[in-house]
Amino acid sequence: MDRKSKVKGRWSSREGIALSGSSGELRELAGLLEDATEGLTIALAELNDEMIKPYEGAISHIIVHIEQGAKLRIARIGGVMELRGDAGNLAALGECMPDDESLPPFYHVHVEFYPGHFFLAAESEALVIVSVKI
Image (cartoon, rainbow, N blue to C red; front, side, top):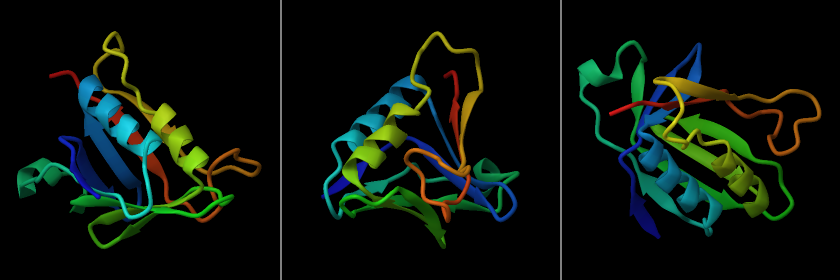
């Protein structure tokens, strides 16, 4: 199933992956992740070179692979963000989205592995999710 999102995705070899959008855009993406099925592909907003800076590249799509019982692995393959893990852990990522309209501008959430993390796999790439006021 293919879906579209207005969320912007960027990547940096040092900082990992960054997703940004308005509270409504992040809420919509969270809903897609919470209801995801195998093979879901989400096209993200197209970015020009100026919009990518200071990152190294854009994330054009998110691809979801459901693996029952597996912790969630966040990876980047070229300009694609891959999410692989149990549907419940994918929903947990959706619940991390800063989608409250009352949050201050550029409020952000870091999603990074630490020993004993309840839903992330050890090999997950760092992710920052930023709520941008429009």
